[in-house]
Image 1 (tube, rainbow, N blue to C red):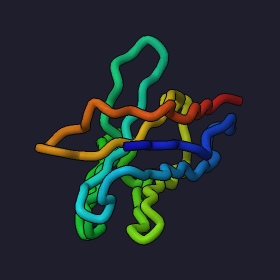
Image 2 (image 1 turned 90 degrees about the vertical axis):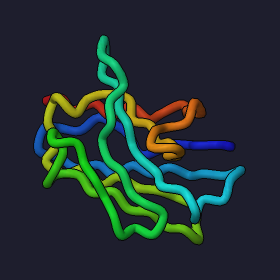
Image 3 (image 1 turned 45 degrees about the vertical axis):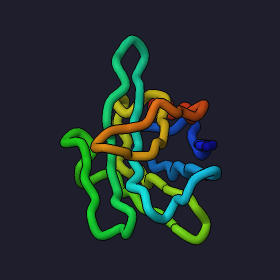
Image 4 (image 1 turned 60 degrees about the horizontal axis):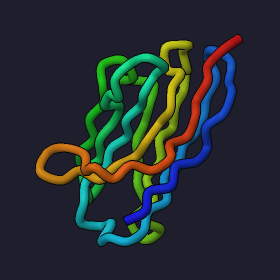
Length: 117
């Protein structure tokens, strides 16, 4: 299994970024996926979830209305559109497979998002 995140960068408050996660090594279309993030000095936290058919999405309260998760099953990718970014959104962002209600132990290298003026 491989999870490769990309799209991070430095952005000013109020700006936007679109993260992407390329996957391989498993049957992408049957699994729910999620994004997590880890801010400096903090625990990794849940950001957004999408089920295998894209019918169900869930978001952390802190990003609801600003972030949107999506997936492309033929391309085996999952994306996170982040708008109206805040300094509190700074961190390393990871995607993961959801199995038995939670993320697996397989984590990619993540992609750094820095929101700063």
